[in-house]
Structure formats: C-alpha cells, structure tokens
Image (cartoon, rainbow, N blue to C red; front, side):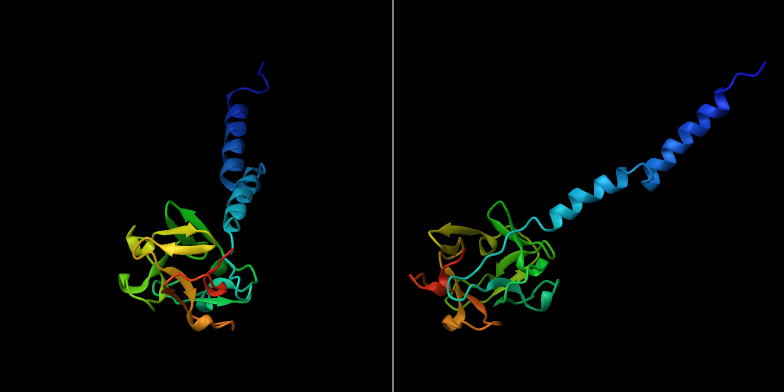
Length: 166
C-alpha cells in the first residue's frame, strides 16, 4: 500500500513554497515593496520664507555638479531631502548638498556632489537659517530673487527671508 503525502508530495510542497518566495506569489513581494515605496517619499522639502519655493535640483538632474535653485514646489525627488549625520542628501540621487569647489567665500554656489563627508557638505540649523560648517555662512537665495530658477549661494547671515528656510 502506498501512503499519500509521501516523499514526492513533500518535495513538491517545498518546491512550491520556494517558488512562491522567489516570485512573490505568496504576497510577500507586495509587502516588501511597500516599505521601499515609503522610503522613496520619506524626505522633506526645504521652503524659502522669501517666496515659499522649494530648494530644488535644477532640471531634476541626477548627476554630480547639478545646480541647486529654488522652484515652485511640486513634491518631486529633486525637492526632497533627508539628513545623514550633518549632511543633507537628495532623495533623487542620494548625493549631498555641497558648496561648489569647497569655496569658503561669499557668493560660492551650491550644487549636488558625491558625498565625501567634507565641511563643504556639513550643515546645521541656526534659528531659521541653514548654515555651512565650512564657513558659517548661510544658504542664501542669490540677489534675494523671488523668481523660480533663482540660484542658491552662500552669504553672510542676515535676518532676511532669502536666508530663512522651513
């Protein structure tokens, strides 16, 4: 007499479980995708008090050297940021907000660059101002320009809306 559920049946059952896990047939693949999708939108926006526009990576450019500007907020990954230690990373490409060429002078432009943990990529809050650890200068909208596309630079800290972020 042959028993049902013998060795061949157990092998098929184990194979079905393994295939289900590999190809997400058991629903596990769907559950695993949810946290990844949630992480993609986990960042926050940095808005200027001058014009309520967002700190933005120009043209949603994912490459190192991409310019940083202010633009109308529309919640794209190039406008979402997250802290990693003292560095601000973009949700678009995980590159760091960076003072171009580690320039410590007034008017130094801000860009996106590979994260190297340098003072030109370290930031801290001082009231409503975002300051650089490189030179204690403030993240500033160049020429207090309220228009979309205005460049972002480093400048002496003044109590002005073009240097206040929320």
